[in-house]
Image (cartoon, rainbow, N blue to C red; front, side, top):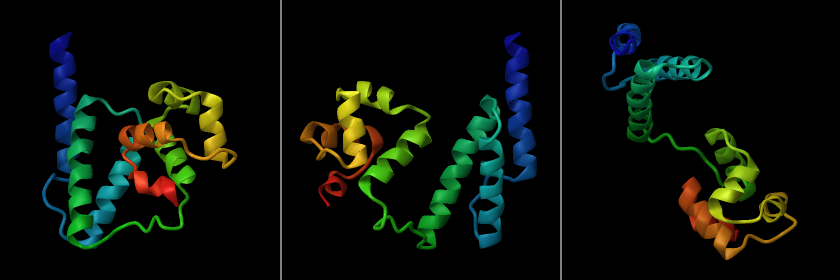
Length: 139
């Protein structure tokens, strides 16, 4: 049975390589096509081969965007919005995140709602766990 799952993984990976080869993205059209593939695969339940393919494809997209100077302007985004986005991105709940960072769920909810200031402990833990610069919490 393991041989079958390895074969399926290889089959899906090779199929995706045939659809869009994993090499440096050079044009806006290639970038757009790569993003459509990422979006399509992320709305499905990808197998291990597709996940391996996605891992490399996303790196190629990021490199292209960095090389071409494309950045997201997050200055108008509140830190609470950024935290909510990261929570959604990871597919976890506020309660789960609160447990992970050692903060009471009610306190984290109040911080996200703007009813409570961000605590130092929450800032440190959220910065580390959600990869958000601590300075963002001080605005």
